[in-house]
Length: 136
Image 1 (cartoon, rainbow, N blue to C red):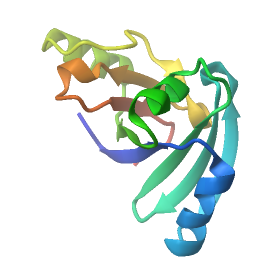
Image 2 (tube, rainbow, N blue to C red):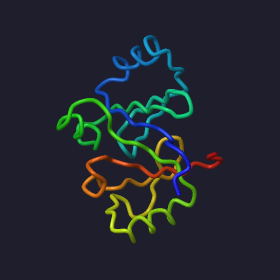
Image 3 (tube, rainbow, N blue to C red):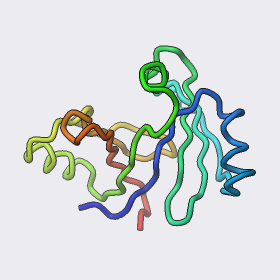
Image 4 (tube, rainbow, N blue to C red):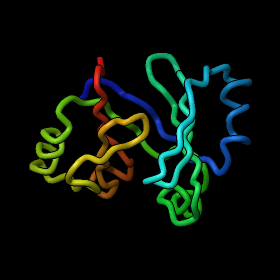
């Protein structure tokens, strides 16, 4: 069902302020940046071995990540699990009693199909199912 940890999402107030820690101190390569207008986010992608880190900067105060930072502060936001056939995985998870935030996948950063499990069903961890073309 789960192929790998695709990425770890980290909420930050400012990419400009956060990136030097990751690129200069941790020496992680910056793979690129993207604005996801539908989620009101700027995202920076960093390679960390076999997985990636996604730094998530809200671009509007009413975005989900802005609300997360306001409530919990900067830090770990979600763990993304790489899957094939995301809609089948959503259906299987729901059949097992796990509440989903999205019942149908939406388009996320990098064009991936994504859907989140509600943290009240997962021990307070926000998990994202993530299907990318060519995922190995």
